[in-house]
Image (cartoon, rainbow, N blue to C red; front, side, top):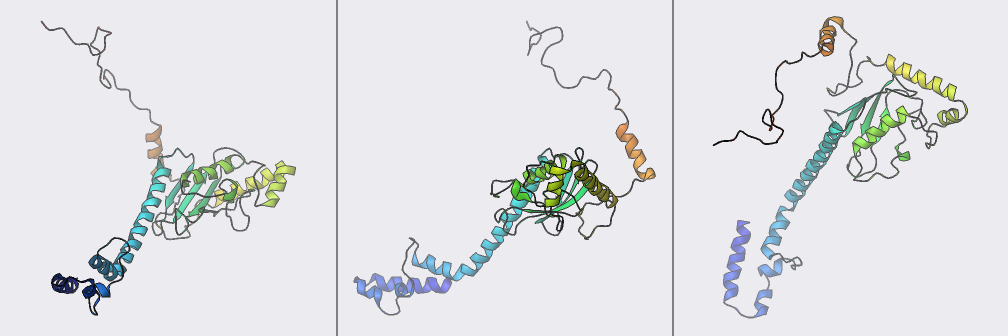
Length: 277
């Protein structure tokens, strides 16, 4: 930049003594070397942009990564503030595009089941289409692929937009396990057919899914990721004191006023105060 400034200053001083336009077009002129100005920038600023372009591209790439990470953290924050029943998710400590989840089903055909799943965000999230949900536990369900465990999300999200939220996708997981709708466009044709023709057999196979999920609750994690959700069997020495503390009734506080009152005792008038003479 200092060399360019010196060149520019030397030609500027020389050009001040010559009045014709032809003098500015001579061979070696600074104006001859730079491309035509199309964006209203000075020629010197354009040359600076040409020199610094690799750094700008690198900075823009890092900035895009920062914005993407911020978008993912925002989605997780939205998940945390939603009232999602019986379902827990957390992004991987090693890859923010991979989320671990566990669904505790509290009602319906799959009641009592503990189903693990993963959510994978597209590489160019929040663009790039709908995230991918794959159940790690085998679930006999019309919307869950029996071979891959992938949940068929297109039934509820035919087109994923930037305005869609990940928490609504998680809410959908709870919905399809709580209430099975026969109108769903199936990916598991066998499950869909049994739901229409033989509900008892469908329920029997669904209960087998619940039983299998419970047998896998304490399995060792398939990854060393510290955010992978794990469970341990009930330990009487460890958990009994905590359980007793949870169920212990709180002692009522006697003769203790809670909060503030803006009504003087003996008066019904708000913001009342004793009269002063």
